[in-house]
Length: 295
Image (tube, helix red, strand yellow):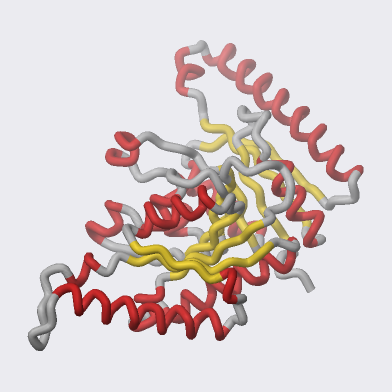
């Protein structure tokens, strides 16, 4: 049985040329899942400047236009044999509205296009995609600039240093989800770990070891964890990769160099300053052209 039975796609109906519907439809067709498309419209501030009667007419006309467009899209998908339902609605709180849709529809996967935000805006406000990564109770599939078809290359990006703490289970879930995803859609599965040894060992000297000796020892430890994880899930040797450097930069470079379609990463609950600064998964959204599946 497919791991996906019900897919929920959230779209901005104003972006009619986005490949989001085509990508979600390809996933639904390959997995045999039903697809519910919710077109959520952010309330237009300028409408509040209109007289009440004019505002009501403008709102009704705008809503009707999007209803007709989405109905036409759904009809085309049903003609291909897909089970598709749709809705169009207004939203004053997009995060709350999306999470309510998740609660009501109980999807196996929430699909949404990445909403790129400027560095300044990210410094002032928590981006919607970050909020969903932190609070959505189901896996989140954030679509990048890939084409409308199925993914061809899927990469599970793990943090092997976390295996020593409480991250081992999350690494397992990442690889399991990536394996199922790749198998479901006939894609290649690759395993990647990016690490920055210097972050923890630049200032540390133990038992008269030099910093260089400590870093080399640490690399060997991480490699041992990584090899064990790869063997556990039967990842072929030629599909195992590692990069040293800041994780965001290292993963981004790998994705560009290897034409990756989907990166599967973990998401954890963060607090305080960590939450303000954002996680590796959150920052990856703005660095890679591919899609990100967060578990």
